[in-house]
Length: 442
Image (cartoon, rainbow, N blue to C red; front, side):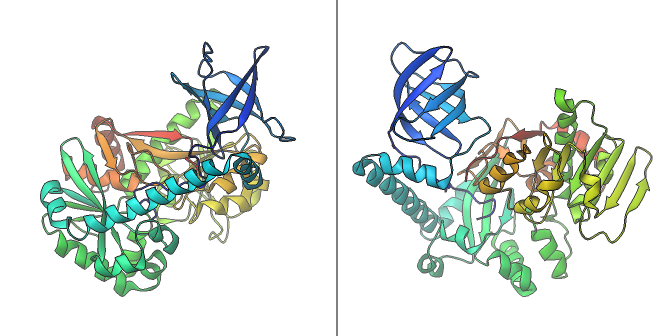
């Protein structure tokens, strides 16, 4: 599900072993792979060989014409070396060739492990929402909920239609902890398109959620759910939390860090892709405190409009010409892969900070990378935050921005009354920090 817990990876990466030759610093080393993914390798570390993290090496696959990659050593263990590719991804055809070169028993083992994980996850979700649901509620005693949704494919990763019939309409998917505050991640069995098209289902989702958890202090609404709620005519008041302040703080903190990178330290402007949206419009205003000019790009703008604030200028535009020469972008479009339509208008060497839902896919990132456009994922972190199991494409210690507002309001209930500066100060004081990380290959 979107922002749901669990792991489902785009490529199998369990026990596929093929020979490789490493070339670095005038040395040639033969070894074998332990795991293979689209963006990296895990190799068996030969005896008496130590390669420091950060080293760049060439990897050859003997007998595979043209299969040569450059990779960076991400980490080194006692028995393995982890590599991350440098400006490269394996295509589906290349991965199929490598998997095809592995012995049959290894391929069967990889498929069996994946099937075992998928079925174990489904069984765990089923048990947690039938026989163990009351026990989980009693043990968790949640202070807050994180309300999410998903599409048909994502839901199928967690339970089958037959299981769904025996489970409640709102499904518990994970446990969340931030310091001494406990929460549950809960998803509706209504699919994303159903919630978007049918306001009655949105009302049912929230009504059942609040009746099922009458004592929770906050219910954080994920992604587009606040839009669905407002479309349904429901006022977002306690315990419901819209989440925009947390998202805005996350983006503000990340935008500040983007300009601190040496290659971008001279930038005085930034582009918000999706600037006409509910969050995007506010983000454009927020970023004038960091940049002299903020370009809010969105096809919904009918004409260019320049707004001067006390701190800077916001240009609202749908003209692609205004993207030329810009190097820093915040991605807030309705769907991450919408970025592909813009790639020919974005300057090579640019950086996109992705906060789209669903985020930019691996395939789309590969095509952007061909145009020398880097993509990094926007997250928030806190040293005392834990989400288990983790959400797809997220580390289990990274926090979606739409959840942060609820976590801050649990500590300071009055700070969310529209004062963005006060919210930022409180979020920073409580230890929440925005970060840009490499996207996971989900």
